[in-house]
Image 1: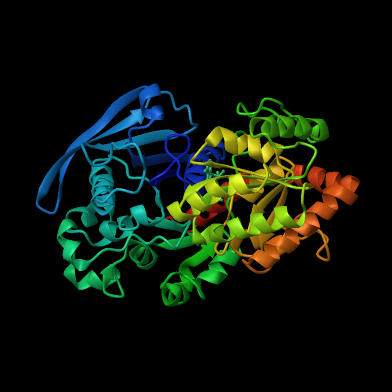
Image 2 (image 1 turned 45 degrees about the vertical axis):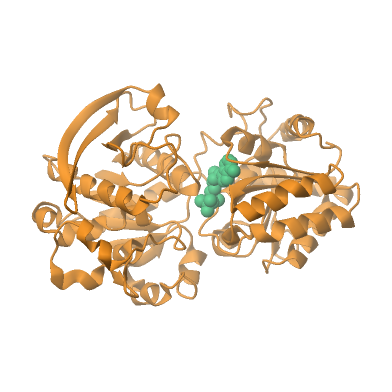
Length: 474
Ligand code: ADP
C-alpha cells in the first residue's frame, strides 16, 4: 500500500510544534510495517535543505488566480529519514526561513496544495491513500473531487484528514476564491463555513475519513471546536481517533544526541541527576531543589497566560524550595512578562524565550516535573516525552493529556492531574509535587521507572492508520 502524507511540517526538516514530530515519525513506522509511506511538504529555506542532497523529480507550472507560477518537486536522495521526502519549491512563495507567520500564508499554502494536485496528476500509478494533516492541506480532498482539471484523474483517491489542532482553520474571505482553480460551482458550500472559505471545514466535509489525535479531543470537538462544533457533530460518522505516538528512536534517553549523560530504565537515578545538574548549572539554578519545567507555545491554548501568576505564587509560597525553568515562544506580551519576571524571583525562575530543540531535550531529561496546564490539548507530545525521560507530568485533564496521564492519587496512576486551567489548580498541583519530592523519594522513583517502561511509540498507532486505510481501498 502506498501512502502520500501531505503536511506543512515534518521534523527534522521544519517543525513548529507537534505536527512536525508526527509527520517526521509516522511514515517511518508505517514503512517498518511494510507500507510505502512518503511525505510531501513545502520547501522552506532550512538547514536541512542546505545540508542534504536533492534530486529533481518533477517540474511544472500552475495558476494562482491569474498569476502563473513555475514549480519544482525535489526528493531527498538518501532516504535518510526512513521515507521518501519530497519538497515543493515555488519560487518566492515557500522558500522562506519560517514555516508560518507571513502576510501571504493563504496564497503560499494554496499554491502548495494546487501544486501537490498537479504533481500527483503526473504520477503513472497513483498512491492508494493521500493523508492530509491540518488546514494547510485541507483543500486537497475538495480539489481531488471537484476541481475541473484534477477530478478526472484524482477523484477516486481515498483521502484521510487528521485534525492536529482545530483552533487553526486557515479561513479566508470569499473574495479570494478567485485564487482557487475552477471547480464545480454547485459544490461551493463544501468550502464554506459561516460565510468564509474554511480549509479545515472543507477537509472535514470532503475527505473520506477524518481522524483526531486522541479520543478525548474527538469528544471535546463536538462541544468546543472554535466554531466547528456542529460540523464535527454532523460528520461524526466519518470521524475516529488514533492517539499519537512518539518516535522512540529519536526520543530515547539511552542515545539522545542532545544529552550529555545517557541513561536507561535501570540507571535513571544517576542519569537524571547528572542531566539536572548540568541543566541547573547552565541556568544558575540550585540542583538540590525540585525542578519544574514548562516547554511550549506561549499561547492561551496552553494556558501560558496563567504561568506568570502561577510561577510567582509557587516561588513565593515555597520560598527557597523550588526551581522553575521555562522554554517557549509565542504571544509577545506573555514572553515579555515571563522574561521580566526572572529579575524579581531571586534566581528561582529562569526562562529561555525562543525555539530550541536541543534545550528541550535537556529539559525533558533533567526536569523532575513537567507542567502542562493546557486549556486545549489535542494529544500533547510533551507529556509523552517527559514520561520517556522519567519526568513526572503535571497535566490538566483535557484532550490527550486526559487519555495518557493517570493521577497518582486516588486514580492509582503515576502523574499529577488537575481539572481547571487556573492559578489555584496549578498551585495545588505544585504543592503536591513538592510534597512528593521532599517526603517520598522512593515513591517518586517508582513512578519514574514505571513511566519509562511505557511503550508510547508509534508502533501501535502506525498500524491503526494502516488498518483505517485498508477500509478505504476502492
Ligand atoms: P503543539 O500544540 O505545540 O503542537 P505538542 O505537545 O503536540 O504541542 O508538541 C509540541 C512539540 O514542540 C514538542 O516536540 C515540544 O518539545 C516542541 N516545542 C514546543 N515549544 C518548543 C520550544 N520553544 N523549543 C523547542 N521545542 C519546543
